[in-house]
Length: 131
Image (cartoon, rainbow, N blue to C red; front, side, top):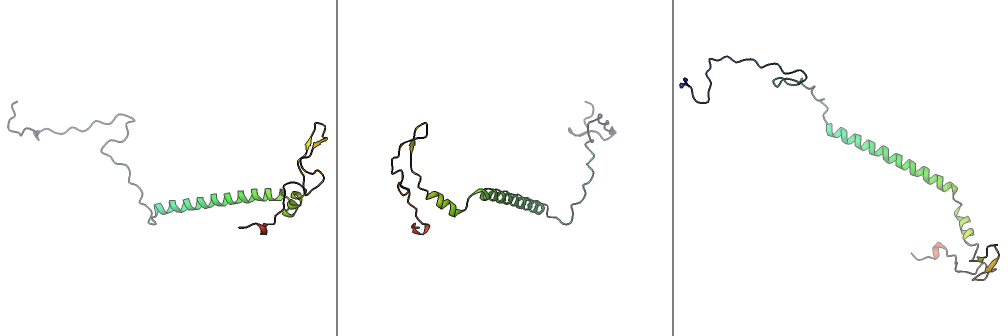
């Protein structure tokens, strides 16, 4: 080494810099260039608030749709059911257990077969039941 005047980690300033070679095709942007500047955000702000409002709006739409489906289902079932007064008369018919043979003839009636009040059924009004 004949150049001993320069410090150990420096290069002489007399050598000109060579330009960087162009990047290969399809490589992307060269490292020195930056992306085009973004458009400034709107002055309204509230980026997070907009998301929250959209979320609340979507939740309300789904909740209203759920209520509508429930109401339609309930109405569909309620129109098929008989009135409550008819249910009470059906329950008071007093049908008891009967054992029949394969031809439908009565073999045995464990309780009185002709007495509709026989059996373990007792009608109790709602007011008679303790809370």
